[in-house]
Length: 221
Image (cartoon, rainbow, N blue to C red; front, side):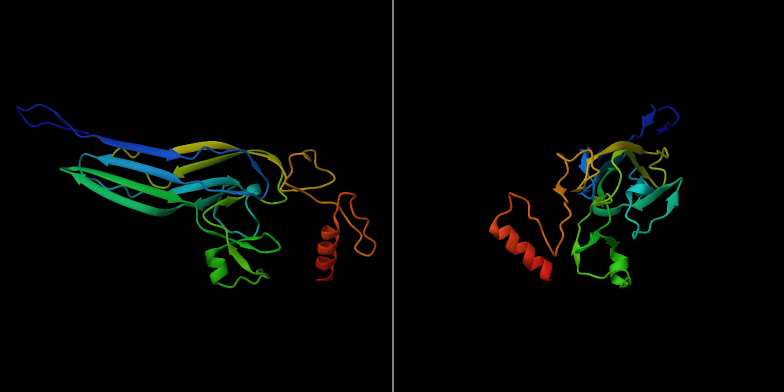
């Protein structure tokens, strides 16, 4: 943006936007990851940074009990603003913000995910104790392997120049949290499940007496 008075040199007013996003590592199904967005915005005219951000993810990556707006077969998850600082040097206003994913709650035993509002509203589908899952995005435990495109984008145009920001990354899900007989990634799966007849268990050869005792105790409960 520029300004010129008669008989004077042109004055240039700048705005600068810096957005930092975490690089994703490949994941197993069911595991969560944080996805903070750090923003530094400078405006020579003292204009504030007011826009928010959304996280767009394929519907197949979201636990069925969580409810979010849908657009083009993607869920839109609103980031929470968790940090906000402003400093001014003459007319230049610098705004520093952090946006993070909303808090998630995990149900014990099932691994089902619930939002804070669902927990506060005593959602009837909650049957067991809830633990704090942090500000993370969790993929379904029994989801499909593959590569999924994720996108973080601003909700409203940014700054004087009405900037739109779209940051895309691919999430690779390469193995299962719980391996199974049909898994092709057995050596990479975190936990392997093997059926056992509780009435006549044929324990694996490498089970110790303590392993057998713990199984029998669990089976009684």
